[in-house]
Amino acid sequence: MSEKTPVENANRNLVWIDCEMTGLDPDVDTLVEVAVLVTDSELNILGDGVDVVIKPSDAAVTQMNDFVTQMHTSTGLINEWEQGMTLQDASTVVMDYITTHCPTPRTALLAGNTVGQDKLFLTKEMPAVTDHLHYRIVDVSSIKELAKRWFVDAYENAPEKSGNHRALGDIVDSINELRYYRDTIMVPSPGPTAAQAQKIAGELELYQTADYAR
Image (cartoon, rainbow, N blue to C red; front, side):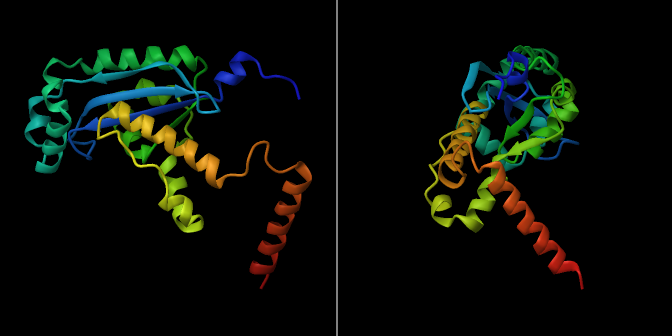
């Protein structure tokens, strides 16, 4: 097997993003913090990452519910966003970091925990970010839900999270969570041989034929 080129390796990178918002409705709420860490395919963090605080509009702050207000107060974020960046400046910082490590458009995957929610806000407020990334995502919460059903001991002994609802800490938690599930419930690298994989695939094909050929 030939070694991959630097560009091919970069195309396998994962772009981990976590956002803090004034709420969960992208039609009325807005981003107030975005953190990004890029990892290689082995989950090694590349560079220093970025963590930007964004100044929200008065209207977005006013309509926050009590739960969100209390959360952002307890983390200290509510005291930081008055001096926060504009959305445009924050987007530039985020894109500079992403394109440094993932130069080829639409190759690197977005990753995170329940990251579909983050993607909704990014698509609306930082479209350059989602336009640059591949349409597929790596959602650690999906892996966790499968572990809950198939590997209960691994699920129940997963490391506790310590991000405390700040974007950068939550990303580090997500990366460590995927590392944990890779090392506990996934087949060790390099995985099954081609013959073993073909045998399993053949068994599934027989199962499908027997199940639906009625």
